[in-house]
Image (cartoon, rainbow, N blue to C red):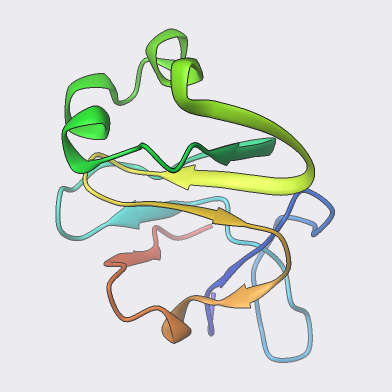
Length: 104
């Protein structure tokens, strides 16, 4: 993917380019070396913090405790970072995230 895009549940997965803005579904975090999990039609509760993800990734049964249903959104998380996205977004606009495409 070049550039790498994140998107809501209505944006299709695939290899992102400037012409074809698709959400990458092969994300990997260079900080914690975890694969980034994504959940369609959910956002993260505002009470989420680093320790919650550190202790509960990647167990979906434990993560559900802080997931809120929201049509059109997509919740992303690795073991050290998380985001709730509604529309297609270039990953470079968020300098805090250390996510890269893990190759398609």
